[in-house]
Length: 182
Image (cartoon, rainbow, N blue to C red; front, side, top):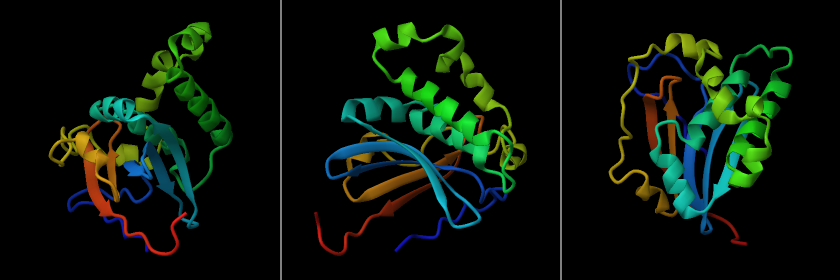
Protein backbone atom coordinates (compact mmCIF):
# COMPACT_ATOMS: atom_id res chain seq x y z
CA UNK A 1 0.00 0.00 0.00
CA UNK A 2 1.43 3.36 -1.03
CA UNK A 3 0.66 6.25 1.34
CA UNK A 4 -0.82 9.47 0.04
CA UNK A 5 1.90 12.11 0.18
CA UNK A 6 0.11 15.26 1.29
CA UNK A 7 2.02 18.55 1.50
CA UNK A 8 2.12 20.48 4.75
CA UNK A 9 -0.60 23.07 5.33
CA UNK A 10 0.34 26.47 3.95
CA UNK A 11 2.74 25.05 1.37
CA UNK A 12 2.13 26.30 -2.17
CA UNK A 13 0.88 23.68 -4.64
CA UNK A 14 3.98 21.60 -5.26
CA UNK A 15 2.54 18.25 -6.29
CA UNK A 16 4.93 18.20 -9.22
CA UNK A 17 8.03 18.70 -7.06
CA UNK A 18 10.56 15.93 -6.29
CA UNK A 19 10.83 14.18 -2.93
CA UNK A 20 14.17 13.30 -1.32
CA UNK A 21 14.39 10.09 0.66
CA UNK A 22 16.60 8.06 2.97
CA UNK A 23 16.09 4.48 4.03
CA UNK A 24 17.77 1.32 5.19
CA UNK A 25 16.63 -1.85 3.46
CA UNK A 26 18.10 -5.25 4.23
CA UNK A 27 21.14 -3.63 5.82
CA UNK A 28 21.87 -1.31 2.88
CA UNK A 29 21.63 2.48 3.13
CA UNK A 30 20.03 4.49 0.35
CA UNK A 31 19.73 8.21 -0.41
CA UNK A 32 17.79 9.42 -3.39
CA UNK A 33 15.02 11.44 -4.91
CA UNK A 34 11.87 10.59 -6.82
CA UNK A 35 9.32 12.44 -8.88
CA UNK A 36 5.77 11.30 -9.46
CA UNK A 37 4.47 12.18 -12.91
CA UNK A 38 0.88 13.01 -13.84
CA UNK A 39 0.75 9.80 -15.89
CA UNK A 40 1.37 7.69 -12.74
CA UNK A 41 4.99 6.95 -13.59
CA UNK A 42 7.83 7.59 -11.18
CA UNK A 43 11.36 8.70 -11.98
CA UNK A 44 13.98 8.08 -9.31
CA UNK A 45 17.67 8.62 -8.73
CA UNK A 46 19.05 6.35 -6.01
CA UNK A 47 22.50 5.96 -4.45
CA UNK A 48 23.45 3.04 -2.25
CA UNK A 49 26.11 4.12 0.21
CA UNK A 50 27.86 2.81 3.29
CA UNK A 51 26.50 4.06 6.61
CA UNK A 52 29.24 6.66 7.31
CA UNK A 53 28.82 8.20 3.83
CA UNK A 54 25.03 8.28 4.14
CA UNK A 55 25.28 10.06 7.49
CA UNK A 56 27.84 12.49 6.07
CA UNK A 57 25.77 13.31 2.97
CA UNK A 58 22.41 13.46 4.79
CA UNK A 59 23.78 15.88 7.41
CA UNK A 60 24.47 18.51 4.76
CA UNK A 61 21.74 20.96 3.78
CA UNK A 62 22.70 20.46 0.14
CA UNK A 63 22.90 16.71 0.52
CA UNK A 64 23.31 14.11 -2.18
CA UNK A 65 19.51 13.63 -2.12
CA UNK A 66 19.05 17.41 -2.49
CA UNK A 67 21.17 17.43 -5.66
CA UNK A 68 19.35 14.38 -7.01
CA UNK A 69 16.04 16.19 -6.47
CA UNK A 70 17.36 19.31 -8.19
CA UNK A 71 18.30 17.18 -11.20
CA UNK A 72 14.78 15.72 -11.24
CA UNK A 73 13.36 19.26 -11.30
CA UNK A 74 14.46 19.29 -14.94
CA UNK A 75 11.61 16.79 -15.52
CA UNK A 76 9.06 18.26 -13.11
CA UNK A 77 6.84 20.18 -15.50
CA UNK A 78 3.95 18.56 -17.33
CA UNK A 79 5.24 19.39 -20.80
CA UNK A 80 8.57 17.75 -21.63
CA UNK A 81 11.26 20.15 -22.76
CA UNK A 82 13.54 19.43 -25.70
CA UNK A 83 16.73 17.73 -24.58
CA UNK A 84 15.69 17.33 -20.95
CA UNK A 85 16.64 13.64 -20.76
CA UNK A 86 20.09 14.37 -22.18
CA UNK A 87 20.53 17.12 -19.58
CA UNK A 88 19.39 14.78 -16.79
CA UNK A 89 21.89 12.12 -17.91
CA UNK A 90 24.73 14.67 -18.02
CA UNK A 91 23.93 15.92 -14.52
CA UNK A 92 23.67 12.37 -13.16
CA UNK A 93 27.04 11.51 -14.69
CA UNK A 94 28.65 14.63 -13.17
CA UNK A 95 27.12 13.89 -9.75
CA UNK A 96 28.27 10.26 -9.90
CA UNK A 97 31.81 11.38 -10.76
CA UNK A 98 31.75 13.79 -7.80
CA UNK A 99 31.34 10.75 -5.53
CA UNK A 100 34.21 8.84 -7.15
CA UNK A 101 37.62 8.47 -5.49
CA UNK A 102 39.85 11.56 -5.62
CA UNK A 103 42.16 10.24 -8.32
CA UNK A 104 39.15 9.69 -10.63
CA UNK A 105 37.79 13.18 -9.97
CA UNK A 106 41.22 14.65 -10.71
CA UNK A 107 41.09 13.34 -14.29
CA UNK A 108 37.69 14.91 -15.03
CA UNK A 109 37.82 18.13 -17.04
CA UNK A 110 37.34 21.02 -14.57
CA UNK A 111 34.51 22.46 -16.64
CA UNK A 112 32.56 19.19 -16.21
CA UNK A 113 33.10 18.80 -12.46
CA UNK A 114 29.88 18.82 -10.51
CA UNK A 115 31.04 21.37 -7.93
CA UNK A 116 31.96 23.86 -10.63
CA UNK A 117 28.57 23.50 -12.34
CA UNK A 118 26.18 22.78 -9.47
CA UNK A 119 25.11 26.41 -9.00
CA UNK A 120 23.15 26.09 -12.27
CA UNK A 121 20.87 23.59 -10.49
CA UNK A 122 19.95 26.27 -7.93
CA UNK A 123 18.26 28.40 -10.59
CA UNK A 124 14.50 28.00 -11.08
CA UNK A 125 14.16 24.78 -13.08
CA UNK A 126 10.42 24.15 -12.90
CA UNK A 127 7.16 25.97 -12.18
CA UNK A 128 7.20 25.02 -8.48
CA UNK A 129 10.58 26.74 -8.07
CA UNK A 130 8.91 30.03 -8.97
CA UNK A 131 6.10 29.45 -6.44
CA UNK A 132 8.52 28.68 -3.58
CA UNK A 133 10.03 31.93 -2.38
CA UNK A 134 13.36 31.99 -0.57
CA UNK A 135 11.70 32.21 2.87
CA UNK A 136 9.33 29.24 2.30
CA UNK A 137 10.18 26.37 4.63
CA UNK A 138 12.39 25.83 7.64
CA UNK A 139 16.14 25.47 8.12
CA UNK A 140 16.28 22.19 10.04
CA UNK A 141 14.93 18.67 9.67
CA UNK A 142 11.97 17.99 11.99
CA UNK A 143 13.32 14.67 13.26
CA UNK A 144 15.28 14.25 16.44
CA UNK A 145 18.80 12.88 15.94
CA UNK A 146 18.83 13.53 12.19
CA UNK A 147 20.57 11.93 10.30
CA UNK A 148 21.40 9.09 12.73
CA UNK A 149 17.70 8.18 12.85
CA UNK A 150 17.99 6.96 9.25
CA UNK A 151 19.34 3.70 10.66
CA UNK A 152 15.87 2.84 11.94
CA UNK A 153 14.81 -0.19 9.90
CA UNK A 154 11.40 -0.36 8.18
CA UNK A 155 11.11 3.41 7.86
CA UNK A 156 11.36 5.68 4.85
CA UNK A 157 12.26 9.29 5.57
CA UNK A 158 11.04 11.62 2.82
CA UNK A 159 11.30 15.37 2.50
CA UNK A 160 11.12 18.18 0.00
CA UNK A 161 13.59 21.02 -0.17
CA UNK A 162 13.31 24.23 -2.11
CA UNK A 163 16.13 25.32 -4.36
CA UNK A 164 17.16 27.57 -1.45
CA UNK A 165 17.79 24.50 0.72
CA UNK A 166 14.81 25.06 3.03
CA UNK A 167 12.75 22.05 4.09
CA UNK A 168 9.21 22.55 2.84
CA UNK A 169 7.78 19.15 3.70
CA UNK A 170 8.90 16.10 5.65
CA UNK A 171 7.29 12.77 6.43
CA UNK A 172 8.28 9.53 8.07
CA UNK A 173 6.59 6.45 6.64
CA UNK A 174 6.61 3.03 8.28
CA UNK A 175 7.19 0.16 5.89
CA UNK A 176 5.14 -2.93 6.55
CA UNK A 177 6.46 -6.07 4.97
CA UNK A 178 3.92 -8.48 3.58
CA UNK A 179 4.31 -11.55 1.47
CA UNK A 180 7.27 -13.84 1.08
CA UNK A 181 10.72 -12.59 2.12
CA UNK A 182 13.62 -13.27 -0.23
